[in-house]
Length: 153
Image (cartoon, rainbow, N blue to C red; front, side, top):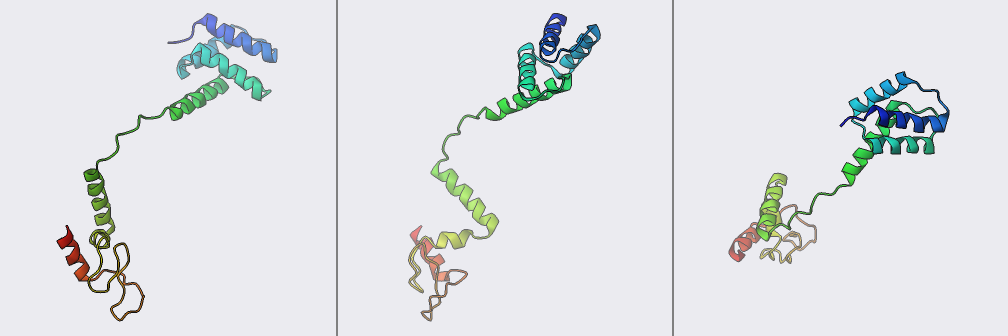
């Protein structure tokens, strides 16, 4: 809804009170056009004028008002929160994690770490180590660990 000419005159009068400008009907028409194009509301425009003069000393122009209103609207939109979504079920989480592991190429490896390794004795959650007894971790898991996982599940 556009501002009325009387509302725009009141806006210009508020600006005049701050900066002692001389404003005629041409200013009212110009501000009316800007208000319509930028969809100002009266309350937003009044607040923008007061904010402008609380922070700055230069003559306010319609572009200043539009910028302040736009910033306030953007800020208000960003502060609105979306409602929280329901927690995912365990099945949904498992499927999502399987997709992630598959995309990363680590699915079977990560699943295998859930069981102890029959070949090297690595505990669940631990990386397999070399069979010679050195504690140098392997990059992959022993195949027997994958077999143990399939038996366990």
